[in-house]
Image (cartoon, rainbow, N blue to C red):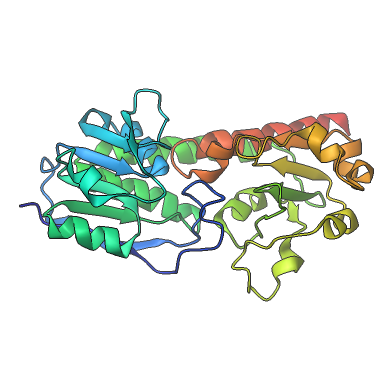
Length: 298
């Protein structure tokens, strides 16, 4: 029987877990029992985590992944099944005879899997950049892909540094990131908000959650955004909610926004924004490209 491996989050699950497609839980992983795990112990891995799936394949453990949930469709070779990523079922997971299950922190599911002798690597979304690298390293330790995980984080760090250096200083430019068409967004205190902060961008949503009661994920109003008048709008609801530059411009009063009039409504992939694995580099590359274009047009 495998010795269970669990990682507990230091903060509670955040608002908008569903909106962010299994991702934006503002909590950092704080440690686990992995030191006692043998490198070759886990040969049948089930992942109920899109970000976890991407990390597993990126560090070379993909050949041991026997099943993933319906949202883990990247990379293309991931063995997508009908396992429910919203409401994981213990019996359905156990049917794949895994010796390790990767998932986001869920106490009842973890205890149920452990009762069956199935090891669990549970994780939550990162709070700061170092948590991303620490989490990838943890995946490497658990799967015996330590060197590969270290190389991945080194490559990501170098690429991200280059992308930030290539972009002009965006200090003085304001932005709004849309998580869904009901105007939920993030503040600078979240991991996603920190990504934009790397470039010096100012988040118009910060004052909407100054007291932290929305845990960094406030819901804004049309009036608020028209008053804030962001210089750039980033849409992270193009897939879930069919939003684009045209639908934004058609909203009441939004055609007067600086971002709309200047053609600075950026359509992002929901998946890339909401998953913090290797494609974090792609997310940052998009922001870098946008800022270079703005700088060139100025």
